[in-house]
Image (cartoon, rainbow, N blue to C red; front, side, top):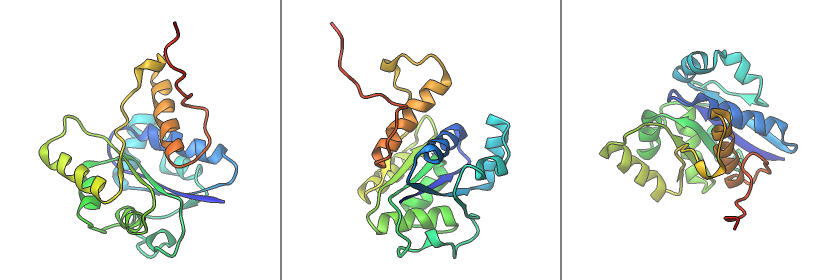
Length: 189
C-alpha cells in the first residue's frame, strides 16, 4: 500500500487538488491522507461549487489542519510523498522557513526532513523576489516546485484537459500509474 499526503490550500486552482484525489481514489493500492485549509474550503466553493465534505469523501483519511498531533505530523508515519495542490504563497513561505504553524506545514516539514518527495503546486503570478527565494529554499531542501502550467503541445481542448495533464505529471513524479498525461512520442513527420 502506498501512502500519499495531499493538502489543498487557499490559492486559486482547487481543481488540481480535487483531480489528484480522484485519481488516487481510482488507483488500487494507494491510501490518501487529506488536509484542507479554511481558505481552500472557500476556494472549493467559489471555483467548483463544492463543499469541504464533498472533497473529504474522496480521501481515505482526513485530518484537520489544527490537529498537530495527527499521524502525518510524525516522521515515524511512513508516507511515499506529499503534494500541496494548489500551494499558496503563504504556505510556500512557511515551508521554506520551517514554520510548522499548522498540520499542512508540519507534514511538509516532516516530508522534507525524512527525505521524501514533496511537490508544491505553487499558484501565483507574477512572482516577486520573496516568492522566488522561497521556491529556491524549498528546492535546496529537496522539494519540487511544480507550478500548474498548461502544456499546450498536447493540444488541450478544455480546462479539464489542462488540469488532467498537469495532475498526471504530478502522479508520475509520485510513482502512481496514470493515463491522464500520455507519454510524449515525439513529433510526427
